[in-house]
Every structure is written in structure tokens, then in C-alpha cells.
Length: 117
Figure 1 (cartoon, rainbow, N blue to C red):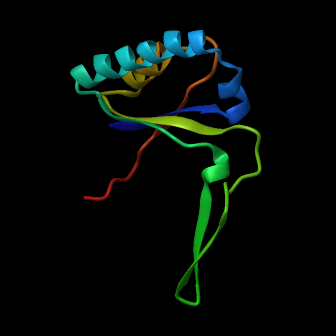
Figure 2 (cartoon, one colour):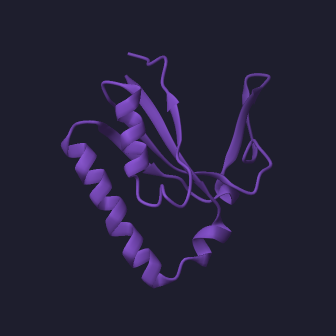
């Protein structure tokens, strides 16, 4: 079964990291990604851009209409997402708990119910 794992943040949070903290954090995430890609359970890991770059796209009278986003007014937003393919929810929970900094920040875990072919 597939699961979506998400972590939250914002530019203020990222700016608070020192270069040394980034140098320490990024290899941890790289190791996490390599570990679970190696088991075949991590299908993809994606970091999103800052919320100021988010756009809302609608279709009005058949024409795309683009405005600034994000959709929700919030201080935090989805910073990274991971798509897992695991045999059980328990396994998805184990992997989520193994994500670097899961002991500091929560990891949101959602089952993926539908997938287009």
C-alpha cells in the first residue's frame, strides 16, 4: 500500500538553520532516502519551493487563470513529501519515525487510496 509522508516548514524556519546545521542535516536526509530507496519502499522524495512561489491555477471560461498561492493562509506549509510503497501501515509508521528530525518535528502520514494507471 502506498503512503504519503509530509513534513512542514516555512522560509523563516529554513533561514534559522546555520550553514553548519544544513551541512549536518542534508547528509542525514540523503542517507534516509538511500536507505529506503534501497529497500524499494521509497518511491520518491521531493522538496517543495517557498510558499511565495506557489500559484493557484483555475480555469475560467475555458482560459487558465493564475493567481498567487498557496491555497491556504498559513504560516507553515508542506516543505517535503515522500511517497512510500510498503506492505503495511505499521511499516509506514516505522519509516516515518526514522525520518531525520522526526524526534523534533512531526511527520504527517496519509494512506494513498487511489492511483491513476
